[in-house]
Image (cartoon, one colour):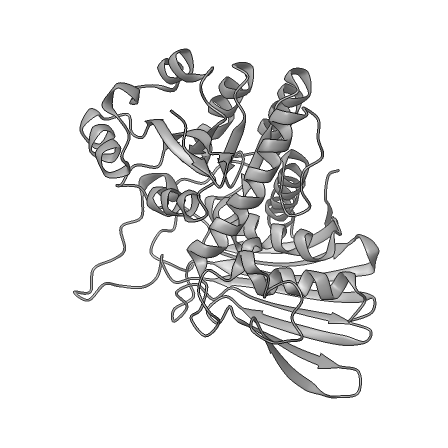
Length: 385
């Protein structure tokens, strides 16, 4: 029997990938459970039998609903599932997402949606043909103070936005462990695609999604460089980009995995005619503000001035106990649950404003391909639309 939450039926979902051995599987597992909107009932967690069954035990999934392949899971489960969560490496996404769409099963896909814009266009065509559902997870947009910032922008607090600077430096490809050994990333992270390097699929997608989430603007042209500064010369691990967006917005972007001292240095700064804002992922409860008169202030989630970030849905525990990365993921998953319920109730219902689908994902991949092209040509390039 399907469980209910306050009279609401839990969405029945399966994982493709996401074993306990993966980098992100347990995060997704915790995030979907946090607000009791989903029930994980089936999975193909790994191609290997032992971790597949071990993960099922850890996640509380019955062995008779564990499968050795996506095809087997779709054959047995498609009539019983509300969605499949695709949590495999990016280069596998296209064929897996297409198989789910062809079977009529809605998809929630870990970013990046695909390894190229061509793959994403195939997915878009399949969605249109089958009236399918696709949401892509960009969890950083779930932070309450970023949603507060979006609200302030929409209310005109900063006036016309002229600049946004987003950076996401990390050190994973440069830092040594306590014994002086080089890092050992997963194999798929050490292979770059022809049109987009893995560091862009991993980090650049977040940079694009945050700019899109906050401003609604689209990249039009850019100039960029890609370098390899860490221990793995075969892949790019540092990207710098200047981009011009619609709405006369200028963007400065930096992301990479060779910035020693940064575990995850995600930071954004936004400047408008009447004010500015700054937010750091490592201090997520605070939004630093400045106005045209030179006044500086700090807005926190518990402030009486906050009108979005202090909503009950974001206050799982009282303010002063920071909500972090997994809570942000859960916030996003709650928005996806709303979108899924609307889809099952009324196919074609518009997405809630916080959920990213195929169009935003495709735009992001177009931008990442333009970054690679600009770095190769050493010149400004246009971003495909």
